[in-house]
Image (cartoon, rainbow, N blue to C red; front, top):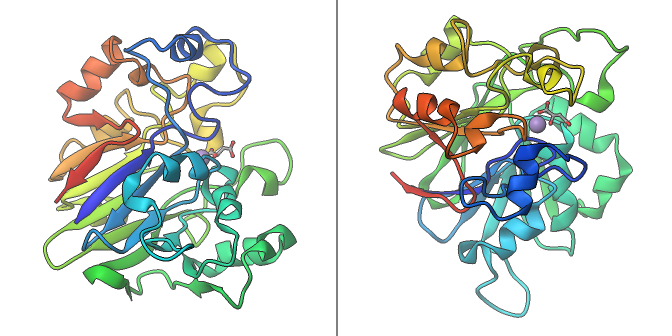
Length: 300
Ligand code: MLT
Ligand code: MN
């Protein structure tokens, strides 16, 4: 199985267009310790020929252009991208679908809840339904993919997409078809892609345990880091993301589990783990985590 990290940043990317914070300015200045990152997505293939995207970020056009494995190989128009698997309905998960217009056949795999969101937004009709198949995937029901892969979706705690929130207060934490994990497997390996997660439940810990590779929500280091930095009013908890550090954080919660390789992605521009010279990066690495960068390739 081959995996390419197309983008490692959270929604907004790094640097974020309107951020004048020091870390974003380091990225703009091409600081070697603060490389730019596009919004979270990975590509995965069982045979090196047929590729599947896990989420379609708003940066997808740039990500495809930067990734030779995803370039057309035959005829005047074609793609090795056979499908896109969606783990939610946020802008950073679905907006890249609009890049994939041009009547090129592929399949969109998502839960009924997320397909309903696409169906309710006429702009997604640019993916003509006679060419681009929308495949409903039931939770816990594996689907066979080309190249010897299989995908299964299961619920993880999360909230509705930002643009569907009701009111400005804390949104209910859901564990249903709204935010899901994608488990991709072949005959030897099991990979989990969980770019958004509000909490680790015993069920989720069971699912993660024994994975060969885990790509997990690295949005924030501290729950209140955006407030502390003066760049926002929301905690990670309010945004539906658990944070990395502290006794209740992701690093501690997943420490007891047996996991082949641990990767962080969906990293917000405020998170100091983005900076190669930060103490937080050193702490994450000492705990066995790799902070993803765009273009990282993993073979299992
Ligand atoms: C999130 O992961 O919380 C969302 O991508 C936020 C957003 O849509 O800006
Ligand atoms: Mn996001």
